[in-house]
Image 1 (cartoon, rainbow, N blue to C red):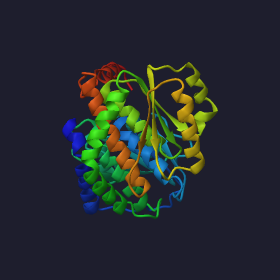
Image 2: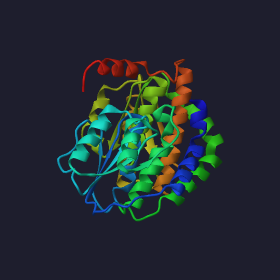
Image 3: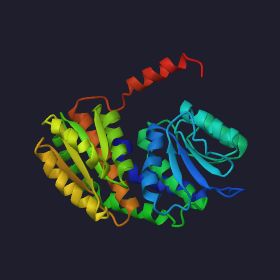
Length: 329
């Protein structure tokens, strides 16, 4: 896993090379809405992308993480299915239902049933090398989703220059990221972590939480400002020093939300001394998101070392899948 995290910027380069060679097939009808469907490490790219493009997308976009699909999915819906293995049962069922409704289908997968279906039916399918933990392949679906949204005319701005700038940023900052991520991991060890993000960055916060869950075997949760100010903030009245709070900060966040963050820090700091900030770097929102994702991945790695756990182990998920396999779909 360490090598896979270290190769994040190379994964982004690989993704851009795949995109450059891809022969895109345009839709034969207008697209009125988009549904991105996928779960776990395969699906988190959709959550992050939704935050990045929601203010500029020409049509509504939703993220689906279920067997079922919304009733609106039909002939003018673009459904982008993300499954690294190609065998995620929830995603395959969602795709089958979307097909039955006549939706436009595009896929992201390394193989399995999803890629075989795409090849058979002529769907657009962007593919990457298989055999790795899906959570370590974030760079590919992240880049591929942005490409699809531009290619299908959902967003107008070309994301490739921003991804390229993100690669340069990560390469130049890698040494600093490693040192700062290790320090932050030591500060978060032996706590239950809340990750706070302003509206527009909740997908990145969810990605970080997932990495702490899977890599470091830690309970963690994310929350969004300003929504959490209206309910969850009161929950901190029951807080203590067994909890920590990590604020994800962007200079581009809404100024009122930034003020909220400053005030919340003081409120939570009265309940626990473990309050920390992580400021993004980069010029645009794509760069900032990639920086925070990569930083969080390294934090999860260092926490796995500090917690003395097997970073690759996902036996709880394997057990669940084994039990489900005994039950007919």
